[in-house]
Length: 98
Image (cartoon, rainbow, N blue to C red; front, side, top):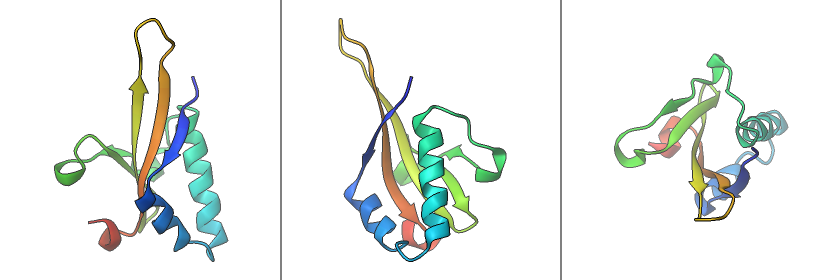
């Protein structure tokens, strides 16, 4: 099943900083597309669970110092098909996010 993609305000802000970096924007789009299609990311993206402030979220490295923090949710209601949601929380460098 495909995930519906939602973007947080913080993610949109971080994405604006990349507006002049077409290569990074293309990489971000491709990663989000893979995640929305429930594909497993290649090991080079270092996808992993987070702890602490971001417990319950995941992070992947789009580039060595360009990170995407995201969460996959399943909003299932009784008697209805589940709604799968990919929430893009934040994007930026290590120093921007942590």
